[in-house]
Length: 267
Image (cartoon, rainbow, N blue to C red; front, side, top):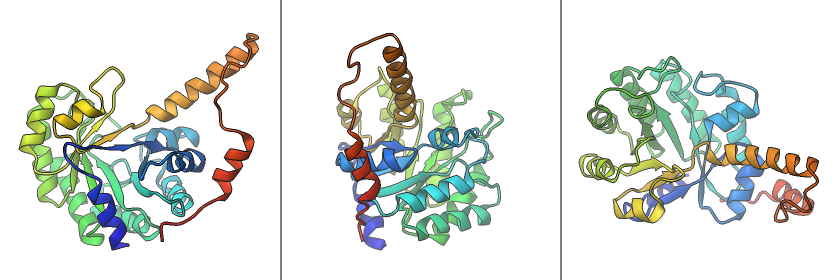
């Protein structure tokens, strides 16, 4: 397992960012793996919505573990979005993450946003990070701060303070969704001594530009899931409206069957 931890860590290269697409079920993960993506993450929104549950409310602990078990045999490195750890007890968070690592997960996202729209206590999130690293030292902990997402005052100062606290607790990377301004990215890269993860935002800076700024990882978050929903509804509406061959490049039935039955392992 240690070689897989190392392989995932090595994909985080400032200046040559890893594009981490986020899957929500076996089919989406298998398709992304078959397309050549060396690592994928899960999307907490996609997993929650697929089960009729709310995101960010600690409601999908069981579903994420079940999905991790399902995806583990795929030839891809897997990191899981565990929201805020599904508990405010650092020991419980660590035990849960150890279960994920036990089935082959190499990384997690651990966030400090709360369901009530506030940031969690900084020391509590740092304690969760420390507990996870003590339980699974090789696991890549991507500590996410929602300073921009939740619209706090002085988000840059807040993110820097939280990022430093999480790194001191053992985090391996810092994730700051909502950041797009190049001048802010430069400060984060310069001030935080760890790989910086940003969220891809349509209309914002692309992979190459963010790479030039020193970003090490770019996630798609829930975008692929939401795009799939839009494509499905759009196709249904087009067929209802009489459109001829409105989406010719969908994978065939046979190809999806292959993705569902061929499950080689990384070993």
